[in-house]
Image (cartoon, rainbow, N blue to C red; front, side, top):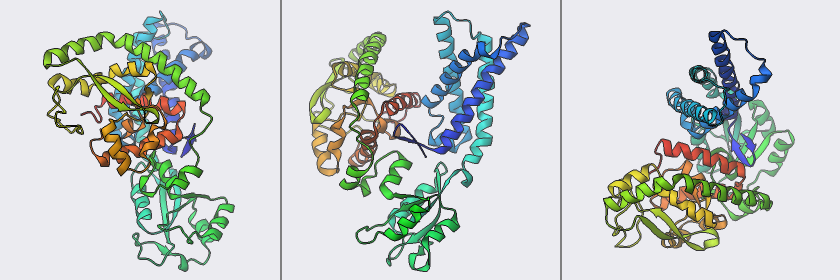
Length: 461
């Protein structure tokens, strides 16, 4: 994987994105040439149309990221990717047409945009048929040797068997006398020279997946492998990189302390984040005020009670604040005490079911962002009753409160709506990844991918 601003991006996605970038430029230029030929006019030099072409390409690429074109499902299925490409390019073309009209520009005629749309879709789908097929081949995957044959090694095998995995496991070495969970593992005693074994397999990375590390680290072997130029990684760091989450099953305090992350150099990033929150929350409240007003009336007409719902939530450093949302449940929804939301929750009203699906109920939270109690991006704020219980049952849960809670977050764009302790555990793994690796780049990526969650109704209840 490539680490960009502390966030890991698979090589497959980087390669696919770069090819897409060139194809989008080609599609835009082709449309321009085709339209000029139809009109019988001389085409200006490339330097004149370079800026509009770059704008077209970047806008299309942004739309593709936003709707999930580079997600795991899209990498696995050409049909799935084609559907999302169609939506992404259509949204991008609409946005470009509106922008071109708003600024009174003449860089893109409607017919040119139509040609660009059709040629872009054709080229991008063809790219996935050709390059996408190669991305699944072992040629584009890192060759990994696993030291260990227990349950951790089995988890790595399951992860590596996924089509979108960026690595291929070429062997397992059993480092203890215990019965292996991975039956094909070779005993360390059967290998005379582990460094030479690594070289013979063409390994690019060795992952340490020992069940018990105390007095069991093969330090001499690892040193020889490392000095031979092969990357050596340990299980928790490897899982964080490959899955985009912190693995709670194998997490220990020393790894959190000594691993990269939780950077102290966040003063400028925090200032930029706050300025963005203020500007974006004001804009969002102004633009969506009519929408909020319309649905507030609909909520009042649909069921008895106030249009807005206020509830105590836990925020930065464990401090409570009052969250405001459009009410989506009946006023007696929690007469028996705090409850998790469930699928097809009977407490949700008719209007509430709709505003939850399209996330309109979340819009008033922009007021909490403007006040500084929340951010646009961060872990979702939970109720104090749930937090007290979760802190007892889940290790490191309190660490998610080291940043402001958010309207959207890394967990929300990667995991469905949580409605149980087990769901909260999985979401905590993503929240810890965000807290550990926060950068403005990751925030922007989350904001873009939130559009995918809204468009495809992922995780709404």
